[in-house]
Length: 141
Image (tube, rainbow, N blue to C red; front, side, top):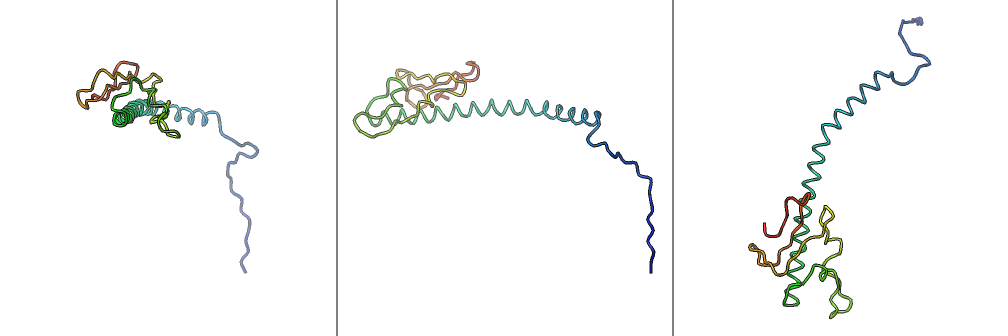
């Protein structure tokens, strides 16, 4: 029969004291700030590029609606607002575009000129002011 004896070891414990020390908290906060500082420019760059891509896709969608309008009516619409209304000749018809599509990702209205044709596509020019209005995005690119 083996006898077990209880041995005690000298282990330093923090009895009655839970949580982290102030220094541990400061180190964790500093690490989080460094990671956030490094990630912020990357996230902002992705958002910038996503807005540009959305404007290009919106312009393509508007361009397709303009082409469909011309195929149906024999002439280009005089404004983009004409694409947001249902056809009065067909009761129950739906609009070709939602009104929300007429604003670019920066909040400005897409520009449309039925009298100026794109050299690339031969349909009226559609453009966005682009980021900050500095770099226009058009269907002629």
